Amino acid sequence: MAAEAQIYIGTSGWSYPKGEGTWNGFFYPPGKINELEFYSQFFNTVELNSSFYRPPNPGFVYNWVKKTPKGFLFAVKLWQKFTHPKMFKAATGEDAVIAPEDVDVFKSCLEPLAKAGKLGVVLAQFPPSFKNDEYGKQRLGAIVNAFGEYRLAVELRHRSWSDDSQTAGFLQENNLAWVQIDEPKFATSVAVETPVTSDIAYFRFHGRNAKDWWSGNGEQRYRYHYNEGEIGELAERVKAAAEKTKLLFAFFNNHWQAYAPRNANDLKKALKLPYEQLPLNLEFTADKSDTEKGES
Image (cartoon, rainbow, N blue to C red; front, side, top):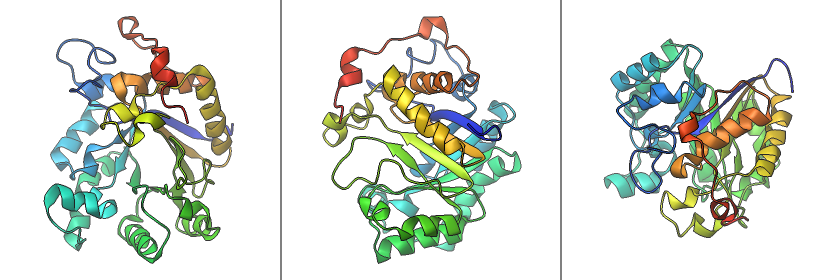
C-alpha cells in the first residue's frame, strides 16, 4: 500500500434509531447520547445519507462539525432531485426540474463542512436503471458543471457504463471517482471492479443479500454480515486502489443491526490500520444464517 495514501473507513449513515434493523443496543449503548459524537470515537469518516432525501439545514450541519474531531471527513450524498427524478416525483409530486436555486440550496448545506475542512467528497449515487445513453450523459455532465468545485464520486451501477471503454476516459478528464461497489450481482450490474479514475478512490459495500435485494424492505435487504474471508477480499481491493491514489474512502452500507460498524472495524483490522475496540458490552458475533443468507 502506498505510504502516502490516506484511508478513511466508516459507514453509510450513523443514525438508525427505529425498526428491526436499529443500531440501538447493537452499537449505541443505552441512555441518551449524541450518536454522531459517539460514532466519531471509532471512525474518521461517515457518509451522510439524509442529504439524499432533502438538503439539511446548514445549522444542523454546523452542529455536526462541532460534534466531530479534527480530521473527521464527511461524504455527502447528493439530493435525489439531481440523481433520482422518478423517486423525487414519487416523494414530492413535483417534477425534478433542476433550477439554479436548487444548486445554491445544496451548496449552502455543504458550506459549513467546506469551511471547517471536513468536506471529504460529494457522492452522486445513481439508480441501477441509470444507463449510458444521451440522457444519462447529459445528467452526468450537468452534475459535473454544478458541483465540479468539490471532490466528486459517482456510483454508476448499470453495465452499459462499464461496457463502454469511453466511460473511464470521461471520468478521468473530469476527475470523477468511479465508485467501486460490492452488492449482489445481476445481469445488468456494472463490472465488479471499476478503475480508479481520479485522485480519490471510493468504495461502497452494500452486502450480498441477493435473496432480499428486490423483495425485502429497506432494512432487510441490507441484512448481510461479511465474514472474515470476505473482509480479506475487500481489503485486497482497497489495497490495490490505495496504491493508485492519495485519498481513499470506504463505507459499509449493510446497516442491519449495526453490521456496518462492525464490518468497518473488521476492515480496519485487516488493513492493519489503527482502530478503537468496540465496547465489550456491544461486541457481537453474527448469526451464521445472516452471514450466508442470499450469497450471490
